[in-house]
Amino acid sequence: MTPPRAALRALGYAALRVAGAALAGALLGLLAGHPWLGIAAVLAAYLAVQLVMLYRLEWWLQHRSVADPPEAHGVWGTVIALIARLHRRKRFHKLRFVQLMRQLQQSTAALPNGVVILNDEREIVWFNRMAGQLLGLRPNIDLGLRIENLVREPQFAHYLEKADYTNPVVVRRSSPSEIFLSLQLVAYGDGQQLLLAADVSRQMRLEAVRRDFVANASHELRSPLTVIAGYLETLAHDPALAAEFAAPIGEMRRQAERMTAIVRDLLELSRLEQTDERAGGTPLDVGGMLALLRKDVLARAQHPREVRVRAESAATLIGRESEIHSAFANLVDNAAKYTPAEGAIEMRWWVDSEGGHFAVSDTGIGIAAEHLPRLTERFYRVDPGRSRATGGSGLGLAIVKHVLQRHGGSLEVRSAPGEGSTFTCHFPPERIRPAASVVVAPRTENA
Image (cartoon, rainbow, N blue to C red):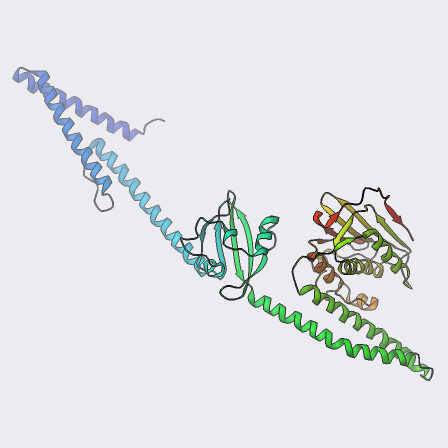
């Protein structure tokens, strides 16, 4: 690296001073008869001056925060000026950094949510005041400890194990008072993570009130509907009933049956929402279940012309039979309702390295892309008029979603208007039990 021109100029001046001092010393020594002694004396004095300047510079460097830089000329003046400039720049950046850190601490302290910074070992590096309140963290004491050793809720431990941080997990803490926390990890930097914590107790309590209201209202509606349906059936079979009342009575029976189906689905959905615990169960013969669902479709007064079953694996599914049957039946029922008589539906079961999969494909009317994210919302209808005509309750896919969640599964939907739809249930590998050593040929049934 080439030295700057100012440094070379200062070095030249210093060399001239040394040469001038040596020349002056030689002249004085020559007058005294000892020229070398004069040179040595002058150079010793020059060295003493340099040592004094070096000592002054060293003292100022130790006390530069409270003392002004020493006055000097030549090389020393240039060096001291450069050091003073670097010191001012460093002090400016330090003050700016301190100000930014103070603003950051103030802003994070004002956040309504908790923020915890974790390193690549999930050890706590820093957390704000709200995180300390929500998670019970203690300043200074808990720094450096692993977060899973301080937040011991089973749901959070399972959330860390599966390493899928797309959605937050809700945990319940009972100390010092019962609260519900939404926790989510966000990766950033070189292996570091942010743990975001939010108090969702109010939302969870409102959700619990809503579930209780729906369950209680459904229970209360079931008995009156049963009475109404019974009287309507009696009237429909009464030979003394005038002919002009047959059509209204038939329509009232149809609407009563529809309301009964809605109440039944609401009760089923409320039961599924009562707990987030994983469902147990026994090994289920999925192929046999699909064969029964096929018979139910063919028993309808109106059904698609072709109903196929493809059981490509004899592996069983570990789950609760009533819930799995309810989920599969809802998907098959939707496919049958929205597929024309000349169309076809197919039920497929297969197993691979990612787990077990059940798919229902149809050649029906299809669903536009903007409706797909909201299909599992309760009472959401793509075409309200057509849904009411087919007698749908609007709760089937919500039931499917909750059943799959209880079994560790997920629902995938692929559809396009005019091209039909495919609803696929994915189950994790731990839910699949391999078939016995007897080889079973894939089952294919057609209407």
